[in-house]
Length: 393
Ligand SMILES: *Cc1c(COP(=O)(O)O)cnc(C)c1O
Image (cartoon, rainbow, N blue to C red; front, side, top):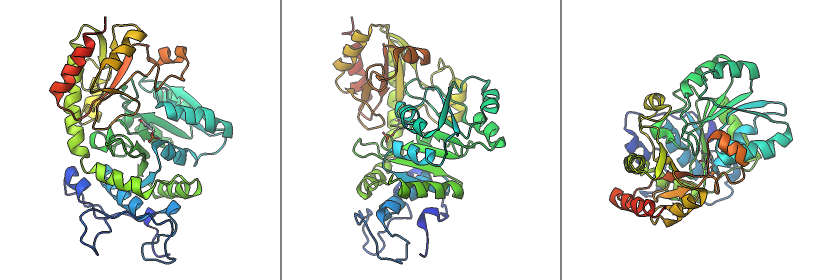
C-alpha cells in the first residue's frame, strides 16, 4: 500500500479566508475531467495496490477524503475522520476506551449521547459521572474522579449553557486527560475547540455543516495522529463509515455554511430580542445577550451567538405545545441547523424519555421551547411569532 490517506499529514493552505476554503478545496478528484463538482464514488471496492491506497469503502473512499479535507480546513487542524452520523462519531471515540474507564460528562449533554453512554456502553463496563461544568470547582472534581476522558458540549442543548473549554482543557491537559468537545451547536466557524486545547472536536454534520436536512453524518477533528489512527480503526472495525453519497451531499452543503450561519445568526439575535420583549415569554436564553449567565465567556469563546434561541413561555405545558403547533414557518420538529426554521418542545420531544425530576433539576421545564432559526426573511419569521404569541391565552 502506498499511502494511508487517512493518516496522511495534510498541508494546509490557510492564507485564504474560510468562505473561500469551503468552496475551493484541494482534494476534489476532478483533475482528469475538468468537472467543477466532485464526482460520487459509489464503488464498494478498489483495485489492489492503487496509488491512493483505497481498498474497501468501509475503510476509506474518495468522497470521505474530500469531506475530511474540507472539514480539517474548516477546523484548521491536521486530521478529520467522517462517520455515518454524529452518534457513530461518538461511538468511534468511546470504543477506544475499556471496561472500568470513567468518562466525566457535562450533565446537560445531548440526549442521544446520554442514552448511548447509559444504556449501551455502561453494559460493557464503562462508567459515567455527570457534573455541571459551569461550576467553578471543576478542577477539584476532575482531580477527585481521575477520569479516562472528559466530555463536554458548548453551547449545550437545549439550555445553551456555555462551558469554559479553555479552562477545562488547560487543567485536563496537565493531567493528560483527553477532552472531547461536541461542537455541533457552534460549528468550527464560531468556535475552535482544538485551538482552545481540546483533544477531539466532534460534530454532527447532519446539522449546520450540511445545513439542508437531507443527510446524516458525523466527524471528529484532531491534531493527534494517534487519535486519528484510533478513529480510522473504529470506522472500519465497527462499520461506522458514512455513504459516499451522503459525504457528497455534505461536501456540497458546507460550501454555503458561512453564508447560512451569518444569516441565521442575524435572524436569531433579532428573534431573541423579540421574544424577550413579549410579555408572554418569561425568559430567553441566547449566548450573546447580556442577560445570559455566561455572557462574558460566550463573548470570549465564540465569534457569534449562533442560531439557537431557547425560551420559557409564561404558560402551561398544553398552551406551550399549542403555541408551537400554531407557528407556520417554524415547523415543530427535532433536529436543528437547517435552512428552515424549526421549533422543538424538549419536554415532550427530545427529552421525553428523561424522568421529569431530572428534567426539572437540569432546567428543562414544561414550558421551555427551543428555536432553530433558519434563513427565511426575518420579517416573515417575526410576523409568524407574533401571530402565534397572540393566540396563547
Ligand atoms: C444531533 C446531535 C448529535 C447526534 O448526531 P446525529 O447525526 O443525529 O447522530 C450529537 N450531538 C449534538 C449536540 C447534536 O445536536
